[in-house]
View 1 (cartoon, rainbow, N blue to C red):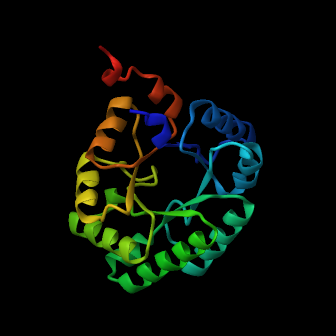
View 2 (view 1 turned 60 degrees about the horizontal axis):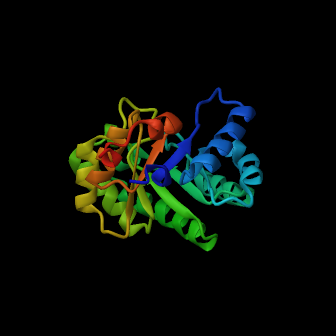
Length: 222
């Protein structure tokens, strides 16, 4: 398995530095990662560094709590796309979901999806599975489908846990094939990443990407 090509090489720590973002970009090019996922303030820097390479820039919207109003998220997305982002990972308003405001959530997703698609960019919607019941995960996935999201993503990495096998299996059952899944949060080993891919994840978000792919791939051992 070419695991590197499925990994969003991620650095979203609040104490990250410009030098670390540039190193992230260098590593992504060297290892052929699917993207770099950086804070919005570093999108322009990453876009300049990665110009002429095959590595796209991913950033986050409404991160990490999803509480920003839809209009603020939309403006944040506009700025990120202008700065050179090719993929946006947007956090839904979990409180709104739990309060039954499904129409507002669907409209928010659709507005951002339309904006992304006009710019030939991808929208990944973060539903924070650690905070949801199985029924709420199913509902969130249905709203993402109706909102024309490209991916549904499990986690921000800032909740009590990240992606689980059960989350991915449930999401894959609910989502149509054209809506992909990104597993993220706490994925520290190659075995864990490959298990999540086997369960249905199309993309892996990890801040431990280089060490993860350096581990022995058992499938290549005679």
